[in-house]
Image (cartoon, chains in turn cyan, brown):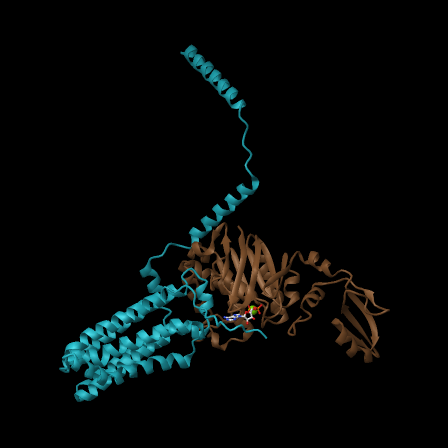
Length: 268
Length: 292
Ligand SMILES: Nc1ncnc2c1ncn2[C@@H]1O[C@H](COP(=O)(O)OP(=O)(O)O)[C@@H](O)[C@H]1O
Ligand SMILES: [Mg+2]
């Protein structure tokens, strides 16, 4: 038993010596202290990163952003809906349509104000340098605001239908002006960028929503030439306006650089 | 960790705001010194990918910062020169908002925000709306937001604008303690801001680096060009027209002048030991708006 053990031990020792002999022919590589230090700092940085930069889901970030949307816009929208429901059933069709048109203008104005607040407040440059840059912040805000608008417009539609308004008129007096003026405002916001100010941002949606109203008679005339009535064509035109809005929303959320550069040299 | 700038150029129309800059920034505090319009803000915006360069590249650890994308922004902290806040936010809410878009976890964000508010002396007013803040307080809040994510690359554009002398000292100490293992680049046209804390100074003029080095090294470029002399008060205006004059101190009928000149300006002038202020005057004497 003991013999066997010692034989094994001897065998191991010779093997060790052989290995040592082999290893003698090789030199231990010198690790460049610079690289070593670099690796260590990089690793420790990675470990630190893991700590406080957790991977985040889109919905998680959306919910976080929800708490930073201005509170007044929810109040304003709820207030408008309340008024709408209060007055709706006592008004005649013309008044109802006017109210719907005002709702559309207000929604578009609210959307533009909230979307432009980074520029108006001057916080856009700080935001651009963050992990979620300005384009992504715009995306979060648009998702939240469109969500709100969807709820308000659905409620308005329900009320409108209860007051026996035809769907195409709802499109004409509410959806179309809202989509169109929001599309124009978002397009303007992207183009104006950091030169944006409060006056422009109130004027643009209000002006473009009126544009939608003024062009209705022209549209009607044009359609009658084509042998179409306003009632038939409005839903399709509304869809087109929606597509335009989504297009401009998309452009706004994918732009990487918002700083406007005047081409005039501002030399003294 | 290094930030490499290669042949960076930014052109507005025909005007070169940043003109073929190359530099390698490693750990340490860099002071970017230059008069108004030298191109400091433009350079910093390029470094933060807020603007596209006309030509040239910026790479962080060997990779273009634009390819790095949000991973670069994760290690970036930036304080712009002109900025504003959502007026209805409180200081604490603003820092939590910035933490959220910097992707920090909620628990860490709270902790870090309180810590930074304490360091910039705004802990008492954390629940006050920002619109009630003074200019200096807003500036300090801006510095705090830049440091939220413990950035490896911290870029501060005129961070001491609007701070009083006491706040300036506090700011310097904050940056010194923060800057270990980080790249800190701060721009200023105020020499004393960078004199003590910057390990390296980059002097920028008309979109170019005209000098870079340690403060005491670059001071030597004006060795022998700084003179002190005592003249009668009446002579001062004519000397002012002729020479580049730094400090002057009136003592009774005479004035002691500090003149920056390559040749001996007056018989009784003696050489004085140069400082950064003299260097600045030497380089920017032709800029009308220098502030020391
Ligand atoms: N968006 C812009 N469009 C056109 N010219 C600009 C723009 N931004 C800066 N400039 C010009 O570039 C030059 C450098 O400006 P800037 O980088 O702000 O200098 P500094 O920060 O050193 O004072 C200035 O002459 C300025 O007029
Ligand atoms: Mg500047």
